[in-house]
Length: 292
Ligand code: GUN
Image (cartoon, rainbow, N blue to C red; front, side, top):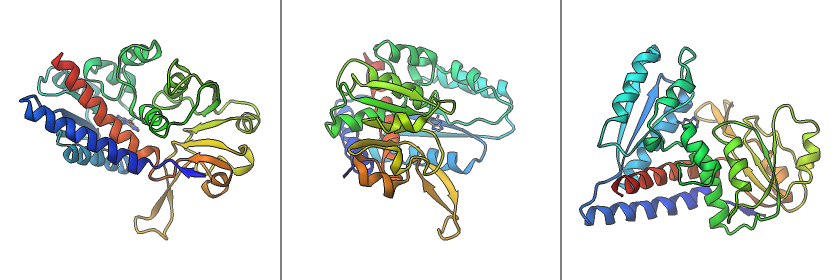
């Protein structure tokens, strides 16, 4: 079993981005600028956005954190989006999800300028990705593909079972895994909460990508020997034995499944850090594309 070390790989990618920023500066070019909009005080969202802003600093990007009250109206948030769309200093921005219940998430995501949509959530980017055109690929699926590429894992012709059909992870990764190219060319089954006999599928899978959000759902007896496991789950489970009062769990029962895997991502330290690195990558790409 070999660990797919997302922490190490993401540091390497950040180092490359940092060098690209230095080269831009040396050539008198603009430094990439990312903004993050955070509505409310959700603990996990605060952690993620904090981490995104810190990562910007590490690679030499300019970053702006926009914190808005939980009670903000949809109209007021839409005007903020409009202002960000016309802010010429910005290369990209994200609106951290989930949003409060009274706000229509789809309406907000649709209002983001696709050319600044470094999360790749706008239908224009999603459609372009599905058609193999230049786009912004959502950071988590982008991170998984980059990880497969850098570890030189051959997935061509292999059977990949994706568990979870979310717009952010499951749906896009199912498209990317089956696209022509390397990495790609996999045969993909997209499983979800209504799938019958899931374990019959996972037991045959060469690669399993789990983006379900149920801690330790995937057990050793559900996978075959030699499987490649990509665990996208990051659920906080209350546990008083830890200083923060919770522990982060993936979708995979690691100790059992690792014994049968050829490669496996740990949680934490697997897909999570890759997501942030690829958001930075998208921001750099946006900055470069704007200059062209
Ligand atoms: N919430 C959970 N993951 C993400 C993400 O990748 N981007 C944004 N904007 N919100 C999220």
